Image (cartoon, rainbow, N blue to C red; front, side):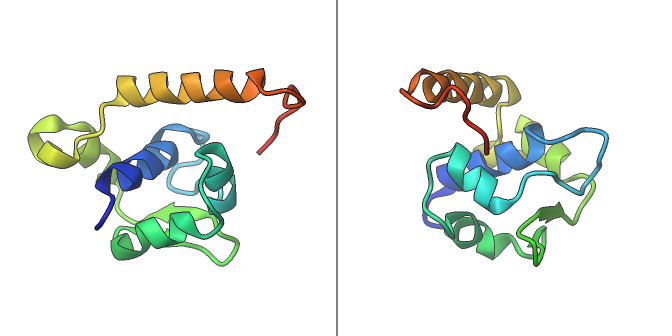
Length: 112
């Protein structure tokens, strides 16, 4: 993986920015994540491509986590080590990103 930080950022959206009532079937699709993170079309598939045994991009570009404990692994610093996702830091970063989007002219009605 060339850009592990970008992969972890995308995984953070997948893990933390979805409806918790719908387990392992995410409401967000790759296009929505690309818009939210200001990525180019196709970037999510490119960055997550090497993780196809853990995460599947469905035909409708929805992202499916294939292992129930995947999130637990990444949020535990003793297991993930270098790949640890700090949940609080990611939530803070996403909140800042949301505020930046809402401050853009003409973006008050922003929707993914």
